[in-house]
Image (cartoon, rainbow, N blue to C red):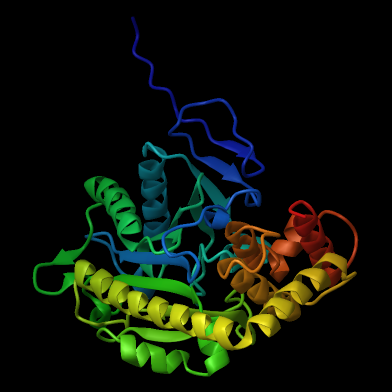
Length: 371
């Protein structure tokens, strides 16, 4: 009997519509499945911790780095990486990012599946559960991104380490016993790992002291900054949402980075909960009224801008965490912080109307389903 080698099937489809085939098939998609998302479950300490994220950068041994990588060599590496991902047991979707269509790119940014980058990215692989992405040539040859709801750095690290090990078997990484993983920028060599946690700190903001809380909770060189809305538009930020991350070139290994971030997070969570208790003790009535007013406005507004919507959603999320309302779950209000941003709104709503109309309709529909 003749041996026949079956070529893996590549299917062009709208992302999220599965077709029959082997689990290792890579599906080429035109858009993201907006019905899914990492924010659909509540992770550890989700009253304060919105998400955890890890970004691993890796370069392939024996190839030029960064701008020195010639186009034919880049195309060869891209093809070899595609074959490796195709052979993974997990199902991935390949999203092509056309230079003349920035909507999909911005949707990925708004969901924190991509980092804002100056490098030209023309494709990204998104795992079917949307908890992991593989980004070719985002500074390094391969960038792995994992994200989870709540404080889940260790589970993300295990997941990414498994995937990195699978890639490393076929495409060995450039690594030095002295410098660690070799980066396109030699000064950045080392763990090549960026860990970040999104925290909702409305009570500390009310007290005017989120940075002071970090100073008291500080472990090493962790940084706390406002998280930009969508990252594509750095003029705005998610209301009362801060990003805690390790400093680049910190000289720590992966385990040390995780420990440092976890210690800082535990401290910030403690001080935020303490501030919330003080808020309830001194201003319970005013806080309850602000939460109820936010729900009422979002249920009845005919149009609303992104900035105003985020402020109101921040109040509702605080109200859910403090058990001042049962109108909506913590998972759903967290999801709305992301899906109500500009590009997600424009892609999720097929009805006519401008952005503010679509956003208001989306928020009304989501709140009505819980009312």
